[in-house]
Length: 228
Image (tube, rainbow, N blue to C red; front, side, top):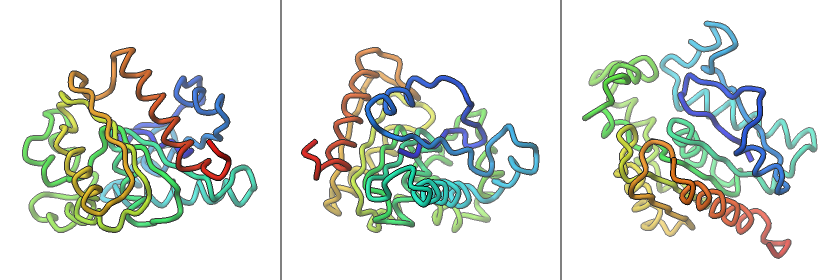
């Protein structure tokens, strides 16, 4: 299970993670990737993501997963992805660009359409996309190319989508768009909408539901031949 952090200029720390512990305690190996652009490794490493969001994060997460399987630490026929917010975007981008390598993807309030987000961006992120992708509208073509929704017909691997109904950062419409595309293309999927949640889940009931549904989803698509 490749876990992709959000931000995207954030990082995964070498510390206790309840989410990681949940899955490792149930038999999943977890790889947490600090792809190029992550903080904590110096300015040049972080600034490598400038203009390359949706590209080098995709490459680094993919190559990290393949390296793990080459070392025989994990089974390449039983790999999945998980990411939230910008990490959800990376999940979608990997499934668009490299179908068939992963057996499933889980996206929590993931970005699918950059152009729609530009219409009413959060104040503190108003110019973030210009650094990560490019100036708008000059680079509108690039924004479209980095938006998974316009290439959703390439997705063939099962996806579980979790979304808060009151998310002000990645609105519900982003999840609705990808679910509509998955339905049209008859891609196996799960959609869990929590109407009262925002950008991240706070209700204990919803958090428990997320874990239970995620585990069942992964077991269904990665462990079928074992009767799970």
